[in-house]
Image (cartoon, rainbow, N blue to C red):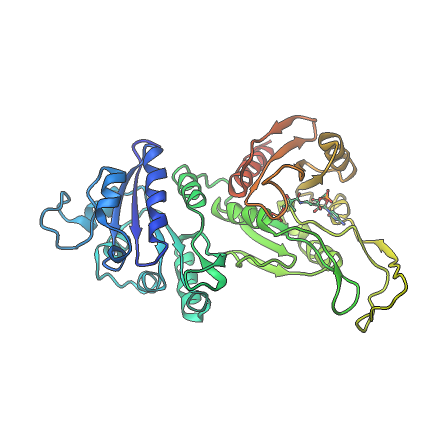
Length: 397
Ligand code: PMT
């Protein structure tokens, strides 16, 4: 990463202190980090903090006479390999979406040809406001990469969507973009995510612990590598990724129908969803009242979606996951053979901090020849990129 220049724009959000970590991690990777603080950001963090971390002057004022840059916004805009705005407030997002250039940061972004990354952080209401959503859509359509926000605890004390993405994830995304491969341009991809829910009655269902994070990370990574992505999503609390067509489903049957409708038109199917293998034979129309006696549920098999796509023509690349608690490699290989897959991602879900619900995952990639690639515990974004690297190799073959 040496010889790379990242302009880090920091705006006026309480999450501004986390940008110090972003600057520090990028600097440690050998990247030259040029920090621009908006006026509001200086209320939360000081230029000296960033200057100490990056060993570079920090821009706070368009008209800084002592600045080392001749015309700052032009010099930085041209020098940047990438511009990251983290955290990005609703205000900066609105300005950028509408071409307003009234300070160093907005002028620099307007003048640059470099890729731009935005990590929004704000109150849920501001984030969900249709104006903010429209502005984000505009930026995404212009090719900006959006990271987060996440659902979680906010500065207001409430819980909701709007939390700044973890600095690690932002740094990983920046590094991937600096090293960007656009190797999936023109490819049609279906990714499934989340855990299906099989209704018992109007209140209860059979479900599982999938958060959808792995599938959503794959969808975002495929999109960033140029693919046209359709994400078939079982219920999750994740924000819908921009630039990706999301098809919401609830049950295994609905997911099967959605996959079946599109499979003949795609190049790649990746099933990260945790699909229920069984559902109640009959959904009760009314809520079942509790009683003293035992309640036995009779279950039947759901469609095996991956297996059903084995005979599809033209044949897309088909990648499955295997969530296992024992005999990882053996069980995964059996699934690869039974479902006639091109790759299977063996997922030992007993590893702490990995698998269901976690931000990280530790997987083993197995191909049809039995070749095994063991990955360390990585962020799901990194796992997604490593899986796509293998997919691209298979496409080339
Ligand atoms: O969502 P997260 O919280 O991020 O967690 C990620 C994950 C652990 C869910 C993911 O990494 C994972 O392992 N997904 C697959 C889970 C699973 O259902 O595994 P399985 O071994 O039961 O199924 C094998 C494969 O067949 C999977 O690709 C599955 O999508 C598919 N399948 C399963 C059942 C079914 N009826 N139809 C299917 O197509």
